[in-house]
Each structure stands twice: as C-alpha cells, then as structure tokens.
Image (cartoon, rainbow, N blue to C red; front, top):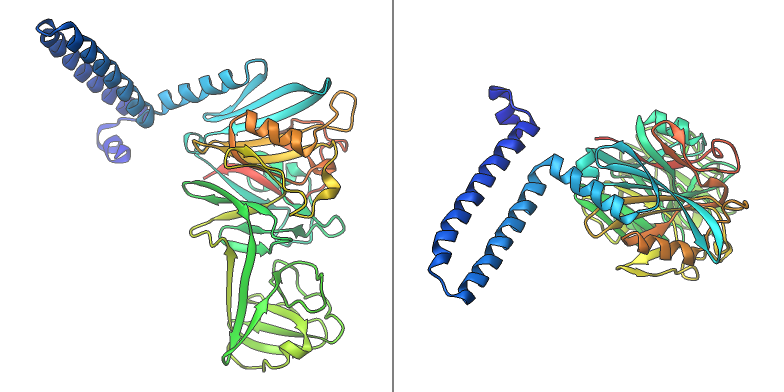
Length: 417
C-alpha cells in the first residue's frame, strides 16, 4: 500500500506514517473528549473502569503505531538494546542492527564478548550461510567471504574439515542441500518469517526400475565402507575414490550415464553415487533414476540451514547436550561463537574471545547461560576456538589469535535482501 500511495502523491514511508499517526491521534482525542462528557454522569466505580479502558485504548494505539511506523519500531528497538546492555559500548550498524561490545566476569575472570543483535525486517536484511567459494573444498578469510556477498555482518559458521574446508554437518543455501548431517547435530533453519532450531537428520533415496537405495549422506567424507554417499558438483569435478569392493554411478539429467569401480567425473547437471558394489551394480547405464532428498524434521519452506552443536538454549531453558551430539572434546573454556533468536524473532550473533589473559573464554555451560540472559529462547553453539571471528561494517571486531581470523569454510552473513 505504501508504494501505491507514494508514486501518485510523492509521499514516502515517513510521510504516510505521520499522516496515519495524526489521524490516529485525532481519533483518540475525539474519543477522549466524548468519554469525558460521558464520565461526568457516571458513578465513581464506572469512572475508574472508564479510565482504565481509555488507558488501554492509548496503549493499544501505541502498539498499532509501532507496527506500522518504522521510526517508532526503531525507537523501541534502540531503547530495548540500551536497557538490555546498560554498561556496554553500543554501536549502530544500520537501522535495526546493533553491535555491542561488553566485558563480563566469570568466576572472577574477564571475558570479552561481541554481540550483534538485529531485527532483520526493520533492517531490511537477510541472514544466510555463505561459502568461501563455489566449491566446498576451499577456505577464505571472513573479510573475503563478507565482501563476496556484500555483507554488513559476518560470523564464522559450521564446523569444517581443516585440510579441505568441506563443511561438517548440515548446510543448506537457498533451498539447496550442500552437505548432509553429521551425528544428527542441531541446526538453525531460516524461513521468511523467522527461525527454528532442531537436530537434523537425512531422509534421502534414489529409485530406478522399482529399486530403491537409501542415501546415507551428501557431500561428506565416508565414515563407514557400507555407506552410500552422494556427491554433487559443489564437491568438485570428481567424486572421491570408491571404498574397497566399491562402485560408482554417474547421473546426468535424471539418467545413469556411466558406472565404474574407479572415481567418476561429476556431471554439471547431476551427481555421482558412491557405495558398495553389491548394492549399486544393479543399476544400469541408460536407466532413468529419481533422487529424493528431505531433511528431518521436514522443514517446509526452509531457505537456509546452518548446523553447529550442541544446543545452548532450548524452549527458553539452558540445554547443553554434548553427549548426544558427540562433542565432548569442546567442553572446556575456549573462544566461542553462537547464534540464537528471541521470542520476537530478533537474531543474536555472539563471538567470545578466549585463551588470553584479557579474555579467558567460556565453557559451553557458561555460554548457554549468557545466551539465555540476553533473551535467547533458542540458541546453538557454532564452530569456535581458532575459528571464532566476527566482522562488522568492514572490520574484524573481536580479537582472534590469528590476525584477521583463520581462513574459513563458510560464514553466517547479514546482507541486503
């Protein structure tokens, strides 16, 4: 409706909000004047009830104005951030996005924490994972990743294999599954209207001539020789070598184009399946084949998924499930990265410095308690340690051990929609 009004009459969003506000105020004044006349004839009890109703009407009116006026929404956002972080240094990134720097003390020892809090609708930004390059097996600095996507904010993302840069765990970008789950670890799902967090598993299969084969994972390193794995062009030009007694099937445009015990080229419009020959040799060259990939939970209309682990906050309560997600090795006091969201869908990104005298880092339990304390109803741990690095408006704002941060596989970025 704003666009339709603005073009013929030359009004912008602020003008329209002002007109609506004036009309609303006049209506409130009219109601109040009429009600005062009416109240004169009432008993004391009725007067008290009427005053309460008037107060409620003004409050409801304010809420309505905050929903339709960007200026009032921004004012509310700014005040809530100031109130939440009273002793912090707070910097504007843009409307609806704040960068907060704070030092907290845990067991009497200092910890430097950088936070980005954002109302993405107010800011007109989107959140998504961003790869270092078009292929999975690459790494770049967070500055390069952010510049590649013209992003205002970036935080290191999923776990990844240091030797290759391939993400470890679920990663989906623009509805396309880049890598599959590892140990069904927890992940953040991004939707047009908000977020969800859950442990994610894979439900994938291929079907040809009535034969169905389960796909155990997508673009991940093999963990069992019996697994059937699928590799897409994002993996690279060639599939990994077959396991002992293994076999490969190359699929192009929904049809099997070649089979071999050796590593096959990955078709640009298809994929390669790698697994035991006893399972895959039944599939013949030239046959049509259908691939079906889903995640569980089956998040309908999910746009992006980024995994981490363990949980930090679940359903408003601290919840750290390191055993279930096979993450015992990272429980100590370390640099940390985390992502979460509030009850009103504000996004929160956190980078914690550690392993130095001026900032000793956090345990997972301490990080979980902190995420809950700043309003997260759901939050997960991301890759941390040497990977922890936060970028805001062209600068690295935390203090990673390696200047500028180590080269990363991927990052969570905030960029223009």
